[in-house]
Image (cartoon, rainbow, N blue to C red; front, side, top):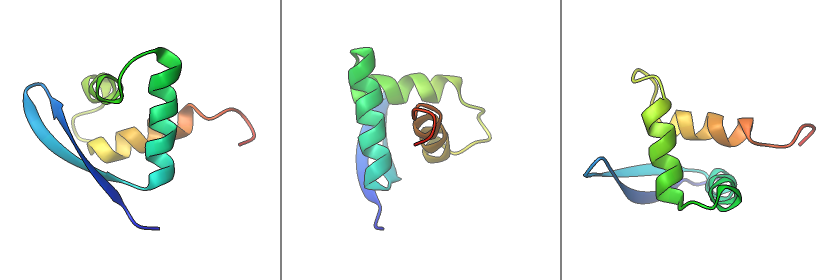
Length: 71
């Protein structure tokens, strides 16, 4: 599966994030469920992640953690 690259602005800096399409879909669903933009969700995850962890990895873990049990 190929990666889909998107650019977002976090703390005033543009950054590119490459994730597989199903992860983008999961993050978009998380943002919609919370009533926030995808960028706001990514910023929230970025603010709480361990600085030694890659942002893309933190986003994947967040997407997996938000899945309903058994999925």
